[in-house]
Length: 563
Picture (spheres, rainbow, N blue to C red):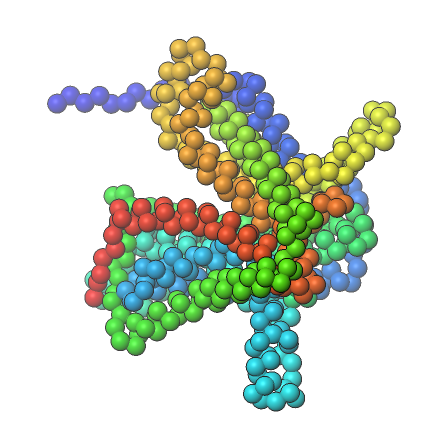
């Protein structure tokens, strides 16, 4: 039988062609402009800090840096141990309720840390039911148990963020490690030794990626740590700007946060090293699960159930109880100036941000589809940079961009500059949202575009279709599922977002997340329950999507039971 080998064109292309590619100049220029726009807050922070000269930090900055480092280390240790051990338990063992518990352990992703934080305080603080019950049993002389401290914040953030490590570790245990694990077992290694010396090293890239995500979330967090009286650098950025409006000091603090983020990403790369692991023969078949019996089986069920209950079940029950009571006594503030007004603001901002992010993603993905060189690919990567930057940096950077734009307009002779067009409206908030959330939208759209055969695009272009018509009539209909996922992801992230709105919102404007933060900050926990419950329910949507995808994969790749 005669076979035809593919012909590979190895003719060296000129440097200009490699840089510019074979795409359409107008679409490529649009991507470059978008990349500059998305990168502008970070560039503005760095430039402003450099021009401002030596910073004039107060004595609190050193304490804030040490506190930030301590919190990051505690949460990384907590999420690493909890996420990895739970992932190993459900991946390599069979016990009662395992199939349900492995999904329940993911649900804390839908519980923002600032919501779990005030529920934790209302339960364990001096006036909460736990300490009240202890005083009733042990006497009123019982000393107050301190919970508003670094340890309390670390516990709440660990319970909220461990699913990042859990999901990535479970995926690595199922896809990468089984064959090496089985080989180690055949050579006489015990299950524990095979886990420590084979599975964990092979899963190192996934664990490092999970811990990097956790650390970035800790650096971004603002409300949770403030509830517990923990002064991190992110809190310092907000308090410096809102308290004294010292833009120079706020920019330098934002630079510190950015340096933390860069350090975390560098450490993640260092931990990963040159490790590259590939699964031969398609997806892994999963680990051979060992069936636990007797007390060990029920202990495994109790451990998983306890974590799921503490991180999601009991807090959700608390929110439901508060919501019902506040609705019955009328304190839920359902009305024109209460819940409905804030819900409307949240939805409007989220919808506009989602439409903008998806439009940007479509332009970038379509331009790459038309043929892009190194410059275009680099610009496309730059559009996703904002998601890796802490929200405090994006917020201060957006303020710097707006200020620079105002100065430029004044220099052109326009009296009053931009006025309140950007700082007095939600335009600044929307700019920061696009910078922050275009990355998840682009990932979903690009994934959908990658499933469209290149021959379809080439055929349409060869038949005379313009790039715009190709996008509207071919690419967009074929990628509509990815567009729907991108819209959903941005909507949910935008509704949950807090630091950006707090930094950039104009006077009199508020959203559900800000309202929850303000009520909880004043200990009005019951009144904060209804908006908090709405945020949690909305955030369950991507978790449900994850469940559906994993269920589909599980049906395609059933696990096996081993000795």
